[in-house]
Amino acid sequence: MAVDWIGFGYAAAIAFGGFLGYKRKGSVMSLMAGIVFGALSAYGAYNISNDTKDIKFSLLASGMLSVVMGMRYKKSGKLMPAGIMSGLSLLMVFRLLLLIIV
Image (cartoon, rainbow, N blue to C red; front, top):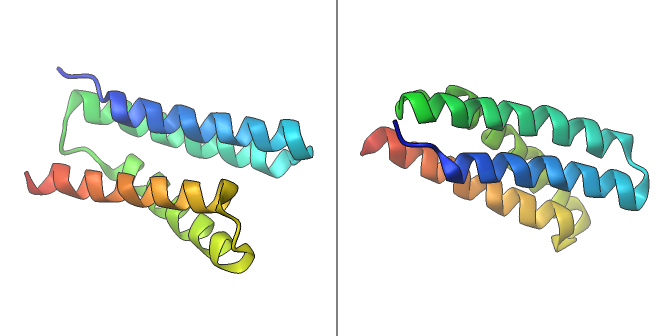
């Protein structure tokens, strides 16, 4: 059983980003989204650690986050945080799809 360190790191980055959004701007919505998507991603990383083909939760969280943050990036044009999170989430989607193929 190999631990999905990349998945857990991704989940921590999401949760930390939500916390930073709350701390800097007072955005409760950022905090809640960070907690929810971070928890989904952490649960997905736990599932992948047990079975490398069980990617549904991670794919759901990273797919939704890449779409939502991608739309925010397109609307605002700001690299931080929308551009970075959409790019990171898109990379995670590609990684998860590679886990299924290989």
